[in-house]
Length: 219
Image 1 (cartoon, rainbow, N blue to C red):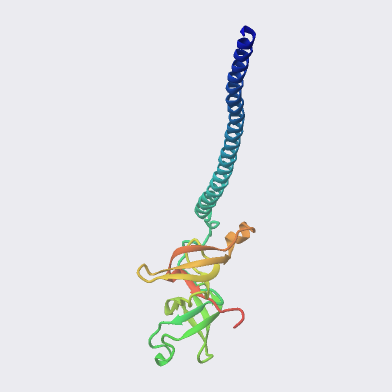
Image 2: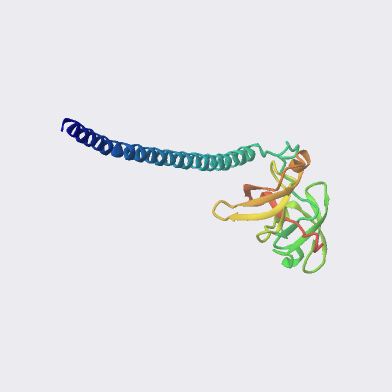
């Protein structure tokens, strides 16, 4: 009987021990799976964080690049001053090829008044030979009898007074309130001094500083 009781106690003890071990085994398995899941989550978070940093870095580089381009453009505009022109302060402006308007009311009994012509040749800086566009007449006129002509938008112009004298380009805009124009310069002294320079806009040129020139295709 004692032996039988001992056997039963050992079986019960073994059963209890086995029951305790199973949950412990399951817990370790679950813990391993949970650890694996956490590791995967940490890896995914790390990848997302890295991707976000790359994205933010790319965006930042693009933004910086754009700002630098703007700043460089502004600095470039400040540097875009023409070479000093020896006649920048002079008041004579007649130039061969310019289209001018006659403002003498009694010349030719008034028939040339407000008519346009093209300067063919300049004489002693203050006089020019003008071919009238309507009649074809060739007339010698003093500068004080003439007025500069502003072309239509996009039309060819020459700067005839001031620091930008002898530069040419196209009319970009007109400010009637300030009696001035904006011109896209494409040729002239500054382009000779800086061969790689691209066309650029000069704003606020007074009406009398620019004059229409004959389009080469029409000349």
